[in-house]
Image 1 (cartoon, one colour):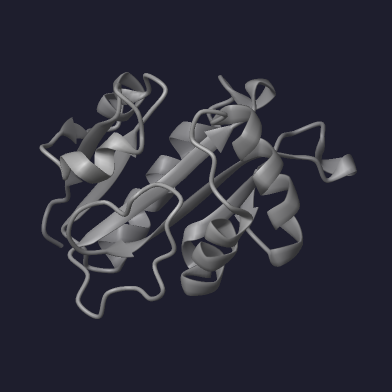
Image 2 (cartoon, rainbow, N blue to C red):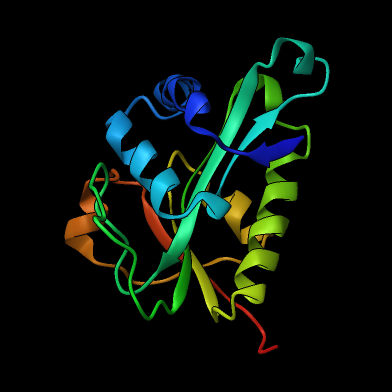
Length: 166
């Protein structure tokens, strides 16, 4: 089950990030800032059967954005006044949560959130050979800022999904 992220979840979010994205380290301050700037875009996943222990097995960080994707491990300071994109900063699931449908459920929720916010597109940087997962959800490769993408690794792909007008 996905639920809103809280500050008390941040240590576990950092642990999950270190396991799922060891080649893409981010400071704890990045996770805390995203939660502070846009809590409605930050969620954690508690896998069925592990809920009694409160063990988080995934998280997502997302927020309104404009322009090129933020560089890896960078603070935003503030969100843009006139966003044109809903940016998925990170979706990470521990191996135990993969195949549970959690990724599909949260992507659907984020798409609905972006539509409700009136944003015309979603964007993300696909890493760890995840482009095929994102393509299954309607995301397509798009040229991106090469300098910023370099911080995400050689297989990084800037991807977006155009939303129909509401």
